[in-house]
Image (cartoon, rainbow, N blue to C red; front, side, top):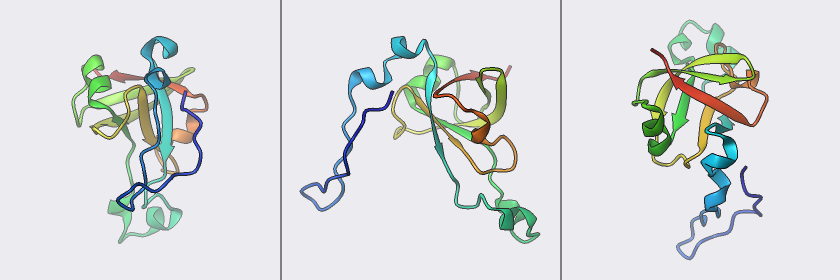
Length: 131
């Protein structure tokens, strides 16, 4: 689903140039309405944080980051509870709407104690509003 890319290149202003993405990369008809799964590891996702009384408040909770278009299509608002599913595996998450997320993709945290994205092993997921 994601285009293969070479190493990032520097732009004329000294920053990194954006990676190319094509319209067909996230085409809804190619995924049957499902979203491409991307994962990231939160800074505070570590066993030391989980067991430390002083850091316990920093243990990350699962959220799913969606583009505004994908959230609107599914009737999901920022901060709402959703269910992310794939092949019978279901994770509870809080929706986070970000304009930087490409349409057709969703990002979940891995390495967290509850609702770890590692439970999802395929490339496509379904995100549904609770209630």
